[in-house]
Image (cartoon, rainbow, N blue to C red; front, side, top):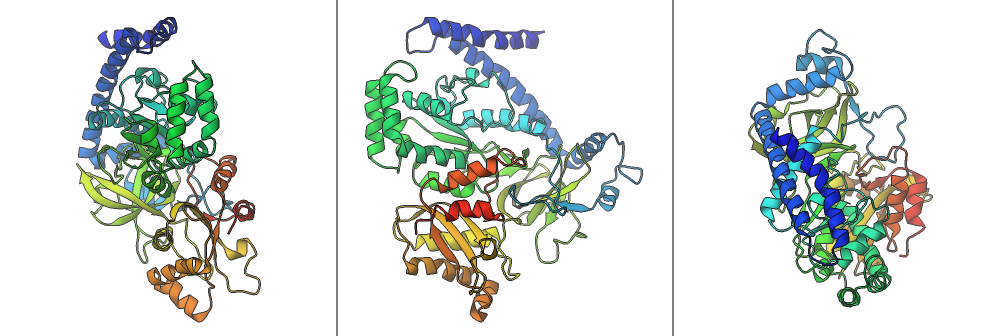
Length: 529
């Protein structure tokens, strides 16, 4: 009965608080808003404690939990058991071969790749990620979720499970129902007391800060003129002064009390996080409540205070298996492991089965186990198998290429890497009269032109890291990697094209290897050096 009354109050307080605030001309939040905030946190605390107990029980008995997850997935197809008559995991594996997910959303299927049908983005794992993430964030940074302390700068939220009243409960300055990213940014700029910035993904936030630099004068003038809200000329002057001092540390100059940035994690986000940490969001902590793959939560982050993003693989639905990564283990006949069988320091590819199909889908996302939580692995995501380059059968992985590129950029004076993507030369028909090679497009800050000497450093770094690539280069079977500097905004255009694809999911995984010519040409046309 008490819970029902609490829920009723939670539903009634938001409209009452908004009506009260409309009547009040004072800049301070009303007592009714504070009451709503406190009561919402009571409800959130109870719900989070319940989810924490469920998570503890499921991870303490991970084998049984995975068995239940398997049964649930089977029931999603109207089956009580897999072909063979029971829900034994070995029988399930024997009758359902591994399939591959589309390695990146812009590649054609051609019948050999099968994407997961639906990973239940709004399932229990999403609810756990949201509730436990909010409580963990509040514990690590007690002031960031106070009324008026947060602003979401994107139309999508970093919290996986939609809670319509959440924005009101936490007193977000972002207007509810806003459909214009510019409006969200202006509302955030109007408030100097923000303690947390939210964005759907790090690459979206990167685009926002680059756009803020480009349109800063116009945005400051809008704040001064009172669009939206009342005119704030003093705040507009503060914004203009902060922008004039450059990109490094801009977020803290705009919002001096800022502590943390919250975004969702997915494939291809690490580079954007590194760029934000080094430039615009220097000095701030980053927190991702969950790791998302193909639209579903596959990992929970319970440790906001950790500088490295670590995720617990939960034993519930979708049903997760681990495929050992290493020589001779990536064949179809390779045996997968359950979560309780994971070994620390080993690398595994994730295999998921959801409740809408009986497809055992190899996602291509590789994780390294860094610890154990009860009986479940705690992992860090390392690279994606589908983002490999190969022009002569050499298979340069995303991990190897990213390491080589980071080393090369470190040798380019003053340069900071913002984004990059690669194309095999045959995609752009650029190997006529030359050996096949890699075409590399980079977005840099601090360097306006690339000398030939700097371009060659990437190829040298690739040879140092990859003996196979070095031997092919020595024989002349593979040509030197060609590096192109693109103008600002080029990768934003690429992401918009990817998001327009019918197969696009949220958050979109940023591809590091482009397979389609028209997408590669988007970057080629924007190359300046």
